Image 1 (cartoon, rainbow, N blue to C red):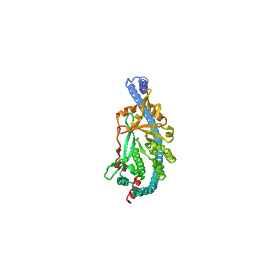
Image 2 (image 1 turned 90 degrees about the horizontal axis):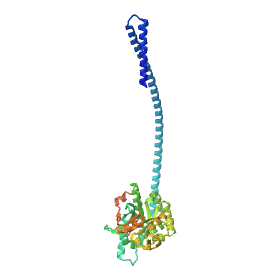
Image 3 (image 1 turned 30 degrees about the vertical axis):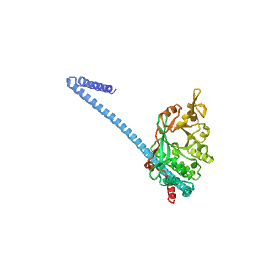
Amino acid sequence: MRRFTLVLWTFGYLTTALLAAVLVGGVLAPGAGAAPGMAAFIGALGLCFSFHALITMAVQNARMSGEIGAIREAHLVLADQLEKVDARVNEVVETVTRDALRRSEELTSEVHMLEDAVQRMNEKLESQLTHQVSAARHPSRGRSPQSHALLDSVRDALADNRVDLYLQPIVSLPQRRTVFYESFSRLRDETGRVMMPAEYLSVAEPMGLVAAIDNLLLFRCVQIVRRLARQDRKVGIFCNISLASLSDESFFPQFLEFLSANKDLAGALIFELGQNAFEQRGPTEARHMARLADLGFRFSLDKVVDLDLDFNDLARADIKFIKVGAQFLLDQLEETEGRLIIRSLPDLHAADFARLTRRYGVETIVEKVESERQIVDILDLDIAFGQGHLFGEPRAIRDAVLAEADPPVDFVQQAILRRAGAR
């Protein structure tokens, strides 16, 4: 379009110059020859182009002035936006600073609360352990020297913090991917030899030391879950809780307060108790289980020896898992009239048992899986999780890992140490 306009302007200028040449050569100087006409043509053409240059410059100046004005307006708008952004940034900085101060104050308050809870729990446990150790110093006459020595080893292991935490994987089936761990406690004597529960329970339980071991295990489980959460590892831990801990009116309130401050870990910590203990629970234990459930913590039933379960009762108690021994479960299977059933549930097809438990929000875990042959039969039952030496043995958590976990758990050992030193 601009080229066409330029051609028109040029044609107009040439026409004007020719008219000027004709006018000068033919009218004003008819006898002077072609020189005046040519001079008139060149002069007129020069004037036309000079006029065009002036017009073009004026248009460009006007356009440039408009662009400069637009740039100035844009600059003013940008400056105004920058002022608004700066004000908003200052507002955000002030908000973040206030929130950081508020969170810092809340964290400080929570730390103080935990310290107070630990101190109160320490005082309660000190009184209880004083009675236990005093009784241990005056054992019954019928106890053998071997029992005395074993009791001393248990007490010394607690006092010297020779209580190790072991974790065993629980895997999904059939993928065999680790999704949970079960925790176990093991004691070491002064030579470093690991003492298994079957060895020391007979002397530790009558003296009330098993409750101290269980309580210590509970706190260490919280430690490990907290550490795994920091690493963003979505793995849960099953931790045994005894009826003694649930019924202890001096220990449980302090433990509940501790868990209240760590309820963000509720999805990763599952409390476990045996089927027999669950059926023997009283109103106090049931109430305390309900309070843990209110915080979001779940429960598991292990050592299941009766598959004819009251699933409504399990649902009311927030039981979300049951553990059944692999060989026990397989021994319960029998074929009747072409149907594979569970002996204690004759009206139920064996493959429907896991689906029945899920209907009540309960998953089945087959534990003590020792061989591939067992797995072949278990997979036919649509069971989602497995545990046993086939998938991994319990392994000790290194002391360095426990030392890096923050929640305080040393008060139990300190209390025992003070009493053990008075023997």
